[in-house]
Image (tube, rainbow, N blue to C red; front, top):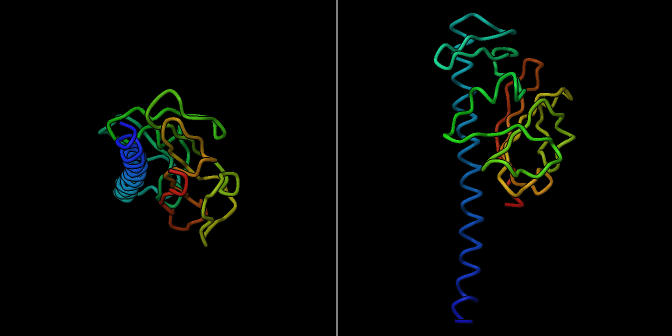
Length: 162
């Protein structure tokens, strides 16, 4: 039994790590797909800065330069549909209510481990999503950053702590 435990625990831990990494990678992919859909809707509606109507979900979302705003309540809680509730959570809190938590309208230099992109404008516009039992400081999250200055948004993951 002891030998089984010694062999099985590292494999189980690695499976859990792999599952979190895969989840965060899938969330980043869903963010990209959602952002692309809003961009297309903005182009069709001729909206560069303002609100875009999304009839399929009965909501409007804010865009800057045609790209979805980096704001949780004004945009991402409505468009990021991965089949799970993603609850708004304070940027310094542990995710405890749902499988995933999210926050937006953050400064990039305010979020631990965020890889500051070349187009970092210093503006708010960072959205992050992280798994249950973690906080952003644990370095396991997906992100979307809209520089709000005409630059193209950056989407990715920070997986060092998963």
